[in-house]
Length: 441
Ligand code: ARG
Ligand code: ZN
Image 1 (tube, rainbow, N blue to C red):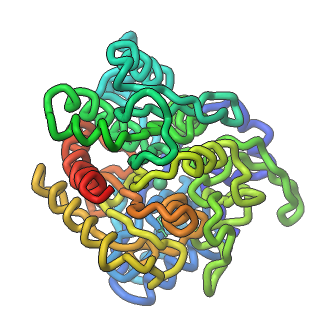
Image 2: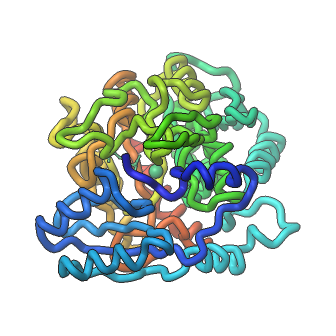
């Protein structure tokens, strides 16, 4: 199985890993634009098969011309680079010292310099986010309802904010669901969800059309779907992705390895744990040390259970899940290439194209539209696939926010100054979707 740096630790490292901050000193971000099938096959073998190196694929290999981002541990960097050179594969070292990039992010970021409190232009802590939601609720008690939908492994609350639709929960009313932060390190996602909260709350008073819509079609927004992971990524390991399920141990070669966390976006009951062809573990892994570990069973995790139970009780007309990064508006299904719901071409794709056009009109940001499997890689157990395939939500999408996986940008380390622009353009797209739901239901 593949060894990913954020999750895969040797037995020796496991002993001392518990409460120490994870350092990425001299880890490198390598960026490769695979120009031919041989290069692609080599990168896929690194991703999918037993690799001698400690690698973390921020952007897994998918097709010729699709940029691959991977980080490599300092001890393996020179060997990997030797291999690449020997094969004539062009690469750039986009980040020479990931730890330094993380420290720079902190040094220039306003969130790291307290006391500040919540700010829409910042990457806030979970407490700051929840305090802001409570403040909004105090200011506008009739517009806003806060719903505690469950507890995490570490007993944090999962808080949904309902905007519009009156104070009672109505199972039959049309609604729009939006979650963010299912993956811990994708900080721009919760920040964008909060931007949309503010747009809705303020727009309700100033925009009569929005008010009419929200009276009829409320939004349910879960700004941090993975609170344990989010806090862990802020305090202990900037590149943490999964939730914080307590460690599971298994024997690997001659020693025991214990790893924490489940990839919540592999834990939904949609072809859960289905092996991908021809190689296993490309998009969903049975290895608890892997960053895409699907968990011991579908819906084994408190976070995915809470979301499932809420959505089954209040099924929405649209489901949106915010991620980063690569600027893609993804449509179901992502578990197999060339697999589409029946209304893919008649409804889902045309709306996605209209939404991304509205997005591009704001700052010129370009999005690709299609299924995650066609544009990237196959991955089973995804929440947006489950929402469409199992729950039958009419419009279901996964949005990969900025940056684009081009030769620029620091991946998950998106500067705070982009929070507001990302919010503005994403809101323009979601407005198109909301107007469509309002006109249909
Ligand atoms: N990056 C997201 C994830 O890994 C999106 C996956 C979308 N689906 C897919 N089949 N590629 O969960
Ligand atoms: Zn993600």
